[in-house]
Image 1 (cartoon, rainbow, N blue to C red):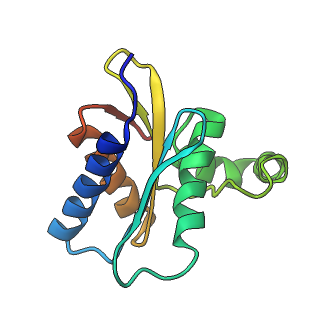
Image 2: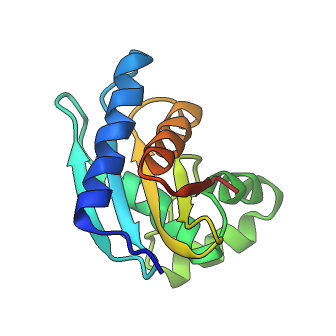
Image 3: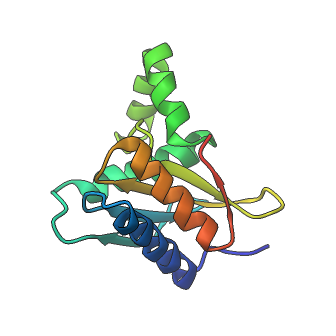
Length: 143
């Protein structure tokens, strides 16, 4: 099974930054986690504000925690706030239930990690995560 290596993670980040530049987005921060929730790579563009690591990694971590993109978590926070509050509590506050966390899968559907992006609108963050994952040859699962 393919693995999410440091080279691939950096490629995802570079492709996400490229998509953001093309769309003239605000500075982004990108975290790439493996399927176990461990950080592989993180980069923050010049001009990014503080706490961007925590937000980006929290979006990716949340997606991994529930096996769905963080857009699903965002919707669930509205529909079932008690569930998301419970997730936040059991994760030690590591989950950020906002769009921008996207699962990365192989062509066969195997989960290999997640990408979390923050810095622009949540929709734009998610679009850049999808662009980065697809540029690396994986399937983006925004949930």
